[in-house]
Length: 236
Image (cartoon, rainbow, N blue to C red; front, side):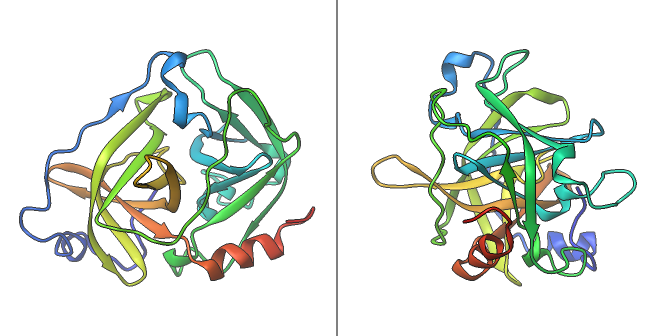
């Protein structure tokens, strides 16, 4: 997972105003009984060569980052059947899993991180198994929630709540959420007044700071989500 092209470290750091580095901690879920509302977050395994994070937005649709569709070493576009989604994995247990049968992305994420969104259609819908897909929205406030896997915690889902949206700039969200390899594609949520979770963005990149790696996210818009659905084979 790399920072946006053309974004120098010092330039990225300047986007965070003084005082925005409020401490944020990871809560690792080590017991499957803790999954609850996080049941539809999972690992997107990439041809045995790495993983990203993704989230179900329908029983057969995983939302992740577009760059996660590409082989982490060769850079070639992966065939969908080389991708495998594992929902609610904690250590050696998980709720359900399925391989992919189709995927879609729009635009060139290498040139424009605002295009770094993708959908993966699963071969087997993950219905039941205590899994509840998330609704998708476009209204992002100042506080968000991040749920992800990552380097050093590949088999333990980690939740950060709350994180701050420190800047909204050039169509991207700059967050003070911690991030590392594997966090790519992780869902960024807002929590409603009733406590429910809505996905509003996915992690696209990181920036290295003195306080650690922080997340940069691609927000969902009605336009980019419709374009993804229209391009995805197998119906919407």
